[in-house]
Length: 435
Image (cartoon, rainbow, N blue to C red):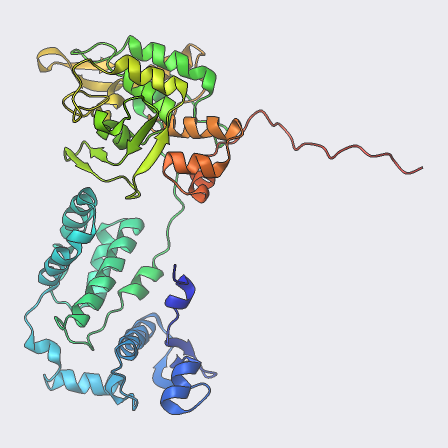
């Protein structure tokens, strides 16, 4: 894998001289190759200010692009603010011969990027969220400051940063493919870095769970206790919607037994399970929002070794007439785990018989009131629970990561829970006090 820091090293940067004026500082390699100097600087005649800093970064990005494509004007006259202003005033700038707008260019970029993205990611993020934002931005592609202002005005910092990154990629792609002039400014990377992420706040508990008097975990727990699982499964055996009582017992039991992602469990077909139930091949995921099957989150097929408990479970639930393409948890159609929330967290406006509105209490909230479960976690915590059980049993994290379809770093960062059984650090081995 390429060294990320090395691949992102810039050839030109903006800094200040001793008098407080902005200047360009070229890397040692470029300085020596182009001008025969150990370190080359170019003053811009601009004092330090937010507006001038943006102008300077635009010039630096333009020079960076020309260096990468071997088109640097060594005299640097091409990048002079005075020279560019005169060219635009005379209407000789290449941009003015083009009628392309931001919206047109972004639509072209979407066509280019679509084959490289997962279908659901492209639909949810690119063709809906990003495209909707771009449609509200100024059409003039050179009015980058107004575009930046509009994006940050209507989107949260996280989404704004993501879109600005895509705009930087779009402009770079358009220059390489000669869709827009090579000297057109592309300051979106600077804009993106200028946005500071706010500290994320923990999500509030669902309303129906809060109504039960439930509190959040005191420590960084991320999963249920092993002894709480039977109570959850028993409660789900008595719950369901008006069509199928207890419909969630089997799917949730499978999640606890395997630690699969919800989409992976829903997309599992009997052709993915060995006849002797020794292995499960995880090769696809189901996206209920768009009713499509897609690849796994990591894009990698993994082999999940079944223990005796999982083998017995699969043997018990497999229908006699099961076909290779039928779904393990849903039959002819994959199970939609989105609907699990109705009984897991509860809802005040559930659809009952004949479309009537009804209230569904929270299964987990009720179990907490009964003292059978300590804290509330969403359905995805079945995966956290399974991972924690494996690690506490002494299974090496490399094994757990491979079975779960993650890297060991991801396991440690996102899934390991705070262990309440250790109330204080352990003491060092006792040694004799000196006499």
